[in-house]
Length: 211
Image (cartoon, rainbow, N blue to C red; front, side, top):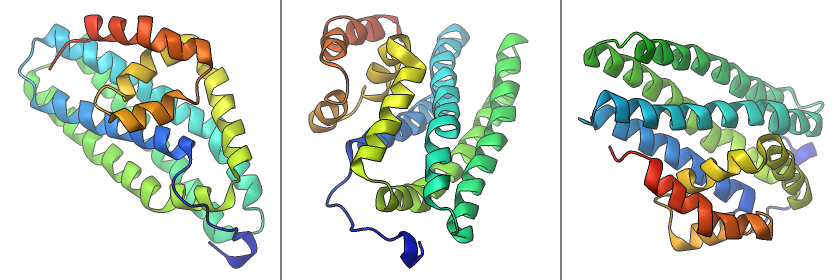
């Protein structure tokens, strides 16, 4: 990051970054389980549908609500603007693989071919997540204020609404520590936190196949 955009480094991670880290961890978890499982095709497809819906929402939300304000903040900084452009380019590489896997489930392709496609997705997505976590997210944490990150979080929350949160929160926090769950959930409206514990989490556990 160039000096003209430098700001005082905040101690610790913002709540937004903690939420993002939990989501990224869930992507890696699910792909690993999808590749290793011997569960039925029906169970695998059900888990794939949840994973794919969350990944598409996540990528779309970043493209619509995260990168544009970051680009505005980076006006006049071509090197860091190129990094943001690279993030968008990497997003575009992921969707064709998702579509190919959707099609593979539709035509009931062989387990071997499905595993090949999932491996391709794992390679593509893992590379993107590592790039984002290693370069883009530290940059964002440097240049965006807590207020700006909070506005981005609110925008993304409005994009998905309560229906999206009802699936995303129990999915992303399924294997998170108690501290991470607390920090992530406190960003939600109070009524949503009640719904998470009373409705969303029990529903997720009842309806999500174990792989």
